Length: 288
Ligand code: SAM
Image (cartoon, rainbow, N blue to C red):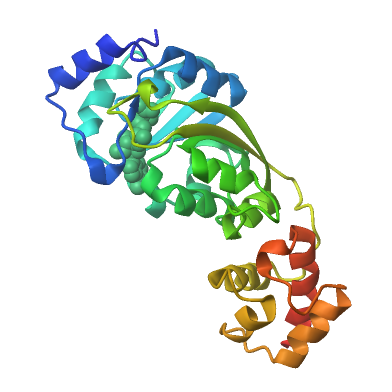
């Protein structure tokens, strides 16, 4: 039975193993059964699913996942947590505990090994210090992926969800919205964790698109363009792209912007994903 969501049970395990929290690993463990149930419900897990959990901690959410999923792969960086996980998950036969840094794991390999290459679901209360590299790594690895349901810092969830005109809009919003449909499904207060984080949290579900919503000839080039556009947020697109290492002339950039009926003064933060895709399709050709 999943019992670790109850605060007194978590505290008992932490004491039993004399566990000390590692700030450098972003360790804030969940102690709220409602939040745990909500995450697993929103991830839509059933016995046909293979779930990758990033950072299982002492196994609190892992217990919930093991009860619903066919298989759970739990990747934890902190060596000190492995004996604890072996203890708290000992009654489940469908879990694989892997002591690795998720940023160094070949996720496609994991999908092949544990799910015959079929799409997996990722569920996690993420370590906040590496939220963006984890999400980008999952999408860019090209591993078979159905959805990612994760607890993140509230502002980061807002950044993934927002569109042009918002101060939070940037490269992360565009990348997430290129690969998936983001939905914020819950806001969570610091009281639901031990120790309490200094920031608010949200649960966001990213449902992978079978095919991106825009047509792009060269994805890598589009993302280089996006990064260059947001590198110098307060500059116009023309100035940002000219100061980048994309090797574009002012004439090429102005002509592409004009073809899209945009103002020569336009800034990157005003462009939609569609417009970035169109600009990329024009400029990647101009650049060959
Ligand atoms: N899932 C647990 C829970 O909800 O109670 C713990 C969540 S805690 C926010 C983040 C977890 O990720 C910690 O257990 C931490 O040790 C682990 N972690 C941090 N960096 C990691 C990395 N690079 N690879 C794998 N796990 C990592």
